Length: 82
Image (tube, rainbow, N blue to C red; front, side, top):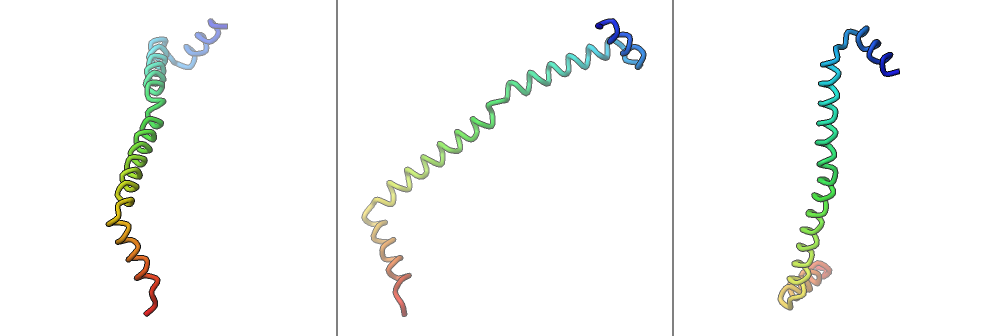
């Protein structure tokens, strides 16, 4: 069956060196893609950790008495009619 494939390739005008080159390119491409499989997941993990850190910082800031008083006054003023 292998000889049949070689004969078919020769009839189609495809030289063995071209086939080898295509195979090498396909292997390099596959290896390159396989090396970057987890890149998007890692980027999401970094972004998630940054968001968690920022949320933690906001919690610490908002727990302060001064900030709590400012927010309470802001809500009271917004709800006061006239």
